[in-house]
Length: 88
Image (cartoon, rainbow, N blue to C red; front, side):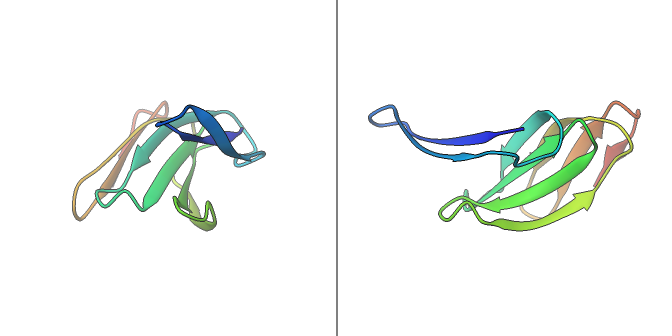
């Protein structure tokens, strides 16, 4: 349920987003410009986060089952779920 932000250069922990989701986080992905992080959870919610401020930008109930994978290109985001569907 927590997303942690790390400094990869020195290995230090920067911030924890405790209770980022109400259920287990099963997938993460960056949008192509790396300024937005996407997270998907076992409850089927997809959330968008600003990477610089870690502010929640939006959320959607994308599936009725866990989101197992998230991918994106320059114009779309794709989600794969245990409900046997792919969201675009």
